[in-house]
Amino acid sequence: MLKIGITGGIGSGKTTVCKVFETLGVPIFYADIAAKLAMTSDPVLVEGIKKTFGTESYHPDGTLNNKYIAAIVFHQKAELDKLNALVHPAVFKAFENWAATKVYAAPYVLKEAALLFESGSYKQCDKNILVTAPLKLRLARVMKRDQVSEAEVMARMDKQFTDGQKSKMANYFISNSLSDSIILQVLNLHQQFLALSASTNL
Ligand SMILES: CC(C)(COP(=O)(O)OP(=O)(O)OC[C@H]1O[C@@H](n2cnc3c(N)ncnc32)[C@H](O)[C@@H]1O)[C@@H](O)C(=O)NCCC(=O)NCCS
Ligand SMILES: Nc1ncnc2c1ncn2[C@@H]1O[C@H](COP(=O)(O)OP(=O)(O)OP(=O)(O)O)[C@@H](O)[C@H]1O
Image (tube, rainbow, N blue to C red):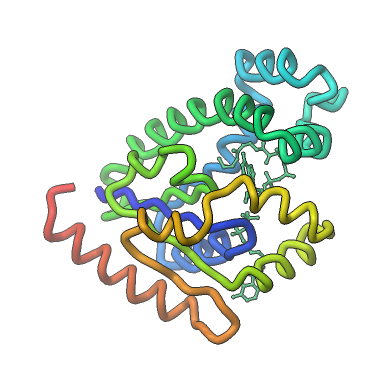
């Protein structure tokens, strides 16, 4: 079974692209969902986060106080490094466990992760896809989706590799600008991955 990583900068549309792969029956691991699950259910991680960022990191009902943590980490690189160091090993492990359950389920699976290259988790995958879109469009899409300011989106963008850096590490590309059809690009890649899977023992 092939493991394919899929990433893209904030607002590039990687989750939207994954929804198209899902309609083709491709199993998808969403790193962000796994991260959030671990951050609320793994007692060691929960303690680590509270110790590092304070008990306000969680609401009284135990749910994650996203706004509180985001306000700290997206304005101080050293704090973000601490959060990543706590969370990413848990996500790596969750992906390995998940992938092991899919070995006979499909010719290939996708791992969707915002920080696939930055975290080094692309090394868990056989090939990697980069989703791109023009910067202004990405900004506009996230501002509308999350009801946030341009400065808030930029603060996150600044903490991610640029598309130039990522494109050197990617094997496949999906362009998600206004004039592109992501459906046709996904169908094309799907055929390539099925052929690759059939021609290798992975
Ligand atoms: C800081 C948190 C609580 C903020 O939550 P919030 O609901 O506001 O944002 P959300 O998780 O939906 O992320 C939205 C986008 O922000 C960007 N982003 C998220 N985490 C990071 C990060 N560590 N570094 C850079 N960008 C990030 C990504 O583009 C992501 O898709 C949350 O992002 C988090 O827990 N991040 C750490 C886990 C992580 O690294 N996730 C990303 C991939 S595993
Ligand atoms: N081709 C498209 N046409 C119209 N809207 C789109 C398109 N692609 C993405 N969007 C919209 O743009 C927003 C961002 O897309 P999406 O959530 O898929 O990006 P993402 O890369 O997963 O972002 P993040 O890194 O923040 O998780 C969403 O509201 C989505 O519905």
